[in-house]
Image (cartoon, rainbow, N blue to C red):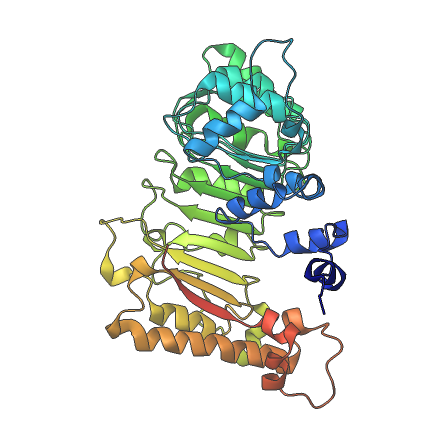
Length: 428
């Protein structure tokens, strides 16, 4: 008896599915992390079929990781030519994040301006390159109407303050601004006195670096009303000419709105000058500060402050990060130590603290300091348990907790895990 094996195989073979719903493909894309390594996976994804291409191409170009040959291919794709009659790439409209922080020698100022011009319609984040950002980029940058984050921190060429000011007037959606560390040209003559600062109306975070002194600082102090009401976060770093007499009035002018502040890499600031920063800013909840600028009197805790009777007067600080800046002039006998930090927590002067980070450069995790660091970490957990049991601060309006549930049971829940206190040594 003869059997037609070919026909038999045709009957038993199940055809391979050549189509998957878009919803399923989108769920697959959601599982991919937004990392540099996933860029290759996304590239392979869009090569499968036209359907997969149409689903995944927007993810591939939304936030590209640009370095080396990838940057070259990216430029060739988005800017095939400067000749007007050559059709522009439609992929430029998919770019939302343009991070050129790793482009040093490959870039050119004209290419940066062209990239901004191509991606202006939907661009939300722009990180300027170190060497290829100049005056010819301002016009293209001012047309990025949807820009939310502008980072000029790496720009090495001196920028014109007037150009920056005119550009900021056009960026009505900007929420975060990082100014360059390089020097800034403010102009000369009496016409500068008529300049009025124009900050974006939705600005929430302002990071100031470089030459924040002289005329610019004077204008900041003279026109505090120009800062938008939405501004609640400020960072002052890498400002060699800025000292405590200039910083204190600047922060005090914004004391009613600032809740997040970062103070580091300020070589003109001496030890102990920022001890009362929480007094200057009564609504401060998140603070990053260098140990070089504080001493054992940090916080200015009243001597009669007791946890049982004064806990309700605790500072609103919930997150504290301590770093070092290498100031060799600091007096080690007055240095702020783990013992001082423990005292602020134990007396409940920092009774709302939930997040604590210290730089590895502090040396607080060394063998001789390790026991003290562990004591501080355990003390932070004890503080959180006390606040939970008394329903204080962020636990005051806690709802949905079953009657009789203990603190350890609460810590085992998803909500408890999210709200848990954290103390970490920051390696980088």
